[in-house]
Length: 462
Image (tube, one colour):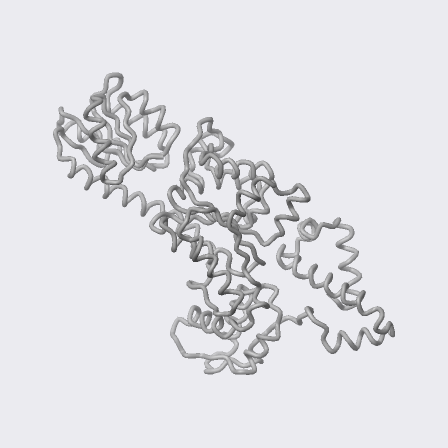
């Protein structure tokens, strides 16, 4: 995919322009006729089109008019050039949407300055599109916080792979900071000046996700009134982050595999392959190897994605990081810094909890505690509201078990039930209570899951 399309019928002048732009690190494609220009323009997106006014097969202004019909979202900037300039023709071109008009001969350095300005405007426009998407999501902490051995191991792996173009697969429970790690990987890479595009594959309905990823042509489906750029197109030369990739349908997995292998894709309703230079970072909170065995995730895609896997530890395995994480959250939510701190007992209460929702749950807990503490300079254990943890055997659990008079020989069965109940609880939290999805992730039937839930509730395990 090129930055600039040059439409110039004189071969020598067109190639000279292309070489000058290449030297200025502006990628360009040169064609000699209006027909060639329209064929290419229908297939690829260009930030700027440099159009000669006089072409052998079509007038440059008529070509501009045809391009504007294709470019219904005004994705492209247009610059006219001619040796036969006139005020009337310039005004006509400007009315049609051209942003500048150059009369030959012109200084190539002047052209490069103009193109750099237009390309920067296009980059800002695309970033604004992405910013609107980003603002609709709750972003993670602005920095990776923690010095525990578990998080340091993940950070070391991140630093080693960030400077390469290698595909990265980030694994970990919900709320462990997978998107934060993906953003850090992008910021430490040579692509850091280019877009970082994130998409949650589980948050978009299946019938819409393909349009979001690959875009669509006008008329591709009911309601497609204009060409739409997909996330792969917006991420050109940058990084695309495919969160919860395990939730993609098999047919879409095949299309992701093609992008990885061939660096091309097609828009919905399109017939021509579009080149895309993107680095892919994928993430999942599911057991992808298990999904491969169940034929619900493509084995070839898994091996393509897991070139460099990074597993993020759950918060329960990095309890030592809680004080630093708490300080980071308080700084983030305190509009007028008050120096509010947690008491020792409050921190002890946080350390005893198992954090099934990980850092995301910790953030919510601290934000709620900050509100409950009001103007008090200290947040105490009474302000820390946490659900009862079921990861271990509490005193009441042991008492209830002994009342059943089953003795030590049945403790193993009881422990297994506790573990099953906790796993079901955690999965239901991850699926927002959707029992059908929870049953799918747990690998049991819907009826079996309902039976377990009923049984565990009767035993006060759930």
